[in-house]
Image 1 (cartoon, rainbow, N blue to C red):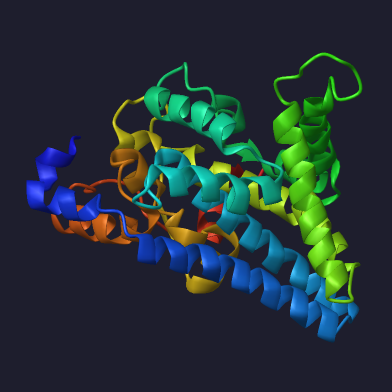
Image 2 (image 1 turned 90 degrees about the horizontal axis):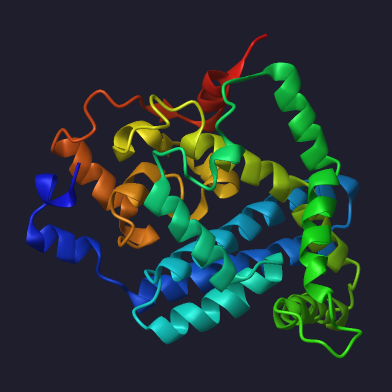
Length: 302
């Protein structure tokens, strides 16, 4: 399946057009939501509010990850410089990531999706799995075990800081720590330094679980994981707005469309899906309405 099979040149040009205005709305809106969640928790530091803030913050952390992803593809802003700077400093570093490193691995995934060489296969090739196995995975995520392993991996970038040698990951590690220090300082200046614990706690627990569910949603238990046709090795999940807040901000649920045309910005993927549906390009492709239905499909009752 090629874009030219279903779309005109004019449609492809319109779909791949970058919009700085729309990119700024998404980026600033994501950070405004983070500030609003912090403000709510500070104003009402009740345990129930804290429990609500954790998944909401994790959803916004995923929102930053999605924007980092698009900037890594060079599709978020029109300017390559804005994609590089904001993708790294406003999106990647606050969530302990590094856009250049992420983009290198992710682009390799795009090149090899649908083959046995896909570097992301370990994340989803074992599905469908049993309920007991999935519960263990969720427990590791929500209890912070997965987050600790990730932070330990990130901390390896500190190798060489205390000696005279140069470590390739040292600069990125320092930037990540500086980003966390900046968030902590902002919380402290508001008079509520403890809010940083919400940020870190959401990242270490709920964010890890959400990332796992995203991996399942995108490629697990698809019709044919080793078929190079995007329609059979990748999945889109249509979901209600409240699920999108947690699992699919910024159009990331349109993953089939993203693999079909990775040059389309996240804010135009819904339009691409509508066209593909109208043109019959997705005939016979299984459709999923919500992440509950998706998980029931990917997790056996054994």
